[in-house]
Image 1 (cartoon, each protein chain N blue to C red):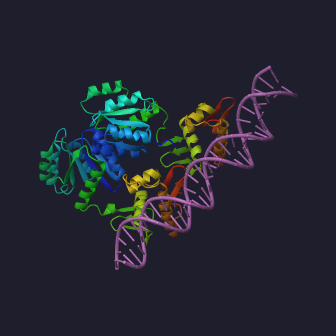
Image 2 (cartoon, chains in turn yellow, green, cyan, brown):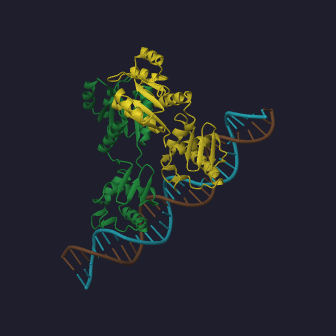
Image 3 (spheres, rainbow over the protein chains, first blue to last red):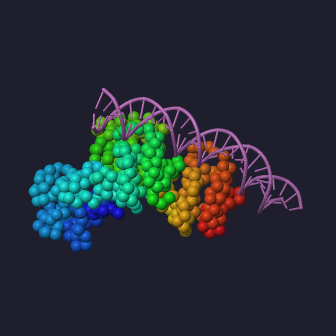
Length: 230
Length: 230
DNA sequence: CTCCACTGTCACAAAATAGTAACAATGTCT
DNA sequence: AGACATTGTTACTATTTTGTGACAGTGGAG
């Protein structure tokens, strides 16, 4: 169900794994290559929606490969984000010159990375699809900011919407109240855990009014789970 | 439920955020500090289950702080994983000398990090392994917090779930009531041993309702055993 | 066979946890 | 400013979970 595929070209295992994980958590799919040759082969199979490209690569350098890509009509529209080590500032400029859409300096904050990926995808017009999360007959559209059950619209408050958004992107997994607060409200604010209960209750009420009883499930002693199957 | 709290002491924002995220995805809670002083304060509030400690810190160095901790009876048992930049090889040795339990070189693979954390936690106490434990047609999923027999869900209480979790990770072996109390309830609480019997009974009842009679076996004079073969 | 430690089962009370409604504070829109 | 929606908090209630004592059943040692 990850609707975007991102090609990671990075020779260092640790960083590549880290990237896969960060992407995965935001529901991006990924394919991996350790050098330009390998990456090139993967392109035959599937054209990714974005490329995360390490500047320093064994063999053909990242920038060199990017330059070639940008010349080929089939690939030239794939946005590229360059990954550079700290202190390679001048590379950024050259990188952007040859057509990279953004760059990130290692080590990077996961939030920032995701934000930049989203920004680049949006800029290149790819992101309309991603704004929709579909789960059974539930549809949550972040762009239109709408939540519908079989095309009937639900009236939810902002917080309920965010809660629903989190649930729908992380179904079938139990989250403690603390985790929900972190994820939906943000790490910085302090809010009573019991407040979650109240919001859950409000959400349930709305869902029930539309005939869905069992979507938000209580796991006593742990927290809550959102799942289509009871 | 053994949800763990990990104290991260790391001054670089990007790396700290990354750590928080990686931990979160594996259901570890985290508290954060940017230097030793701040970390020390956090200890007053809550003693974490493990500390991820950057070697290089502004003010008191990581190792220096670790050394002090290891001298204090209250804190000396908290396992510490040192984070070092590449090329600080000699630090590792010193770090392990002063009592760190493991070290990781930045940048690190999330899988490896989680694996090491698990390993250290396992070494220094108790922790359960993967999120899914499969035994015959039994499936226990800690992530979803679900227990199923051939896809039919069992309704178990938190304690029953933990008991089941322990049994399924330690099948075919007899455990005394004391051992079960230690493992499932925790070393600290004092509870009558006969209480186990009652919980066993409750568990058996639920299992029987789903047609499994012989899973939890009594070993007279010793304790209980969980096994698929009668 | 008889005794007795050991175990299974039940009922009850205490404790923990979650659901709910009401309220107050805050922000937003007209 | 006034009306309204939103949100967090609290107090109260309902429900579930848990520990314990009591008692009966069981099986093995002698």
